[in-house]
Amino acid sequence: MRPYPSKQFIFIFGFIITASLGYGGYRYVLTVKELKEVKNNFASSTLEFENKIKQLETEISQSKTENLVLMNSLVTEQAKNNLFEEQIGTIQGAVGVLEKLNKTDKELLQKYSKVYFLNENYVPSNLADIDPKYLYNKEQPLQIHANVQPYLYKMFESASSSGVSMEIISAYRSFGTQSSLKLSYKITYGSGANKFSADQGYSEHQLGTAVDITTPDTGESFLKFEKTTAYKWLTENAYKYGFILSYPKQNTYYQFEPWHWRFVGMALATKLHDTNQYFYNLDQREIDLYLISIFD
Image (tube, rainbow, N blue to C red):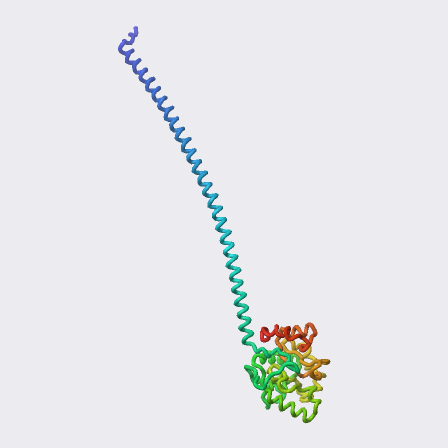
């Protein structure tokens, strides 16, 4: 027969069971409390985190607004700077134009034939010898305004490349030379000289920008020049090099002079050619607008 447990054993076993249950209950209560604390702490942290996020979002929004304001201010300042630079550029451009005009001989585009007068002291600021190969009389030196010389040479070379032969028979003439020439014409032709020769001070030749052109075959027989291929070529092409026919048919100043060509700059010469106008029929104020670009 199996012996019954002793009372002592039962007591000890019961004590252990009770202690275990008590400890388990304590741990349960402790665990629940800890969980509540953790939950409360998490809830608090979550709220704090959410508040922090809202705060950061507000700060970001404010930063975006500030950046937008700064960007608008920057754009405004850049616009002001650009406007200021444009104004400076305009002023500098105007100053440049004035300086350029100040350095350009204002006489070069005046209408002289029986209109304006050049006194005996006027001499172009810069005269250059014309290469003898372009001259009718190789032994008689002629001069032209130095700034006109390149255009003159280009025109003659272009004509030559087209098979057209031209030669210069007269160019710059001083006040004194024009006076002597006019006197000789008066002796020979009397008052009829006024139809084809300017008095001293009224000749375009004194400017150093006008030339009388002939051909090897025509020579000094100017009246034959109208029938030459050289004249035809000049009427079609001289404007490209800044030259115009000063005294065309029906002009009211002198007889028709197909040989007399004056440099007025490519811009004005092109305008006159394209609009079929005559230099001396333009108002002087309109002509003066082209002075700034006469050598451009």
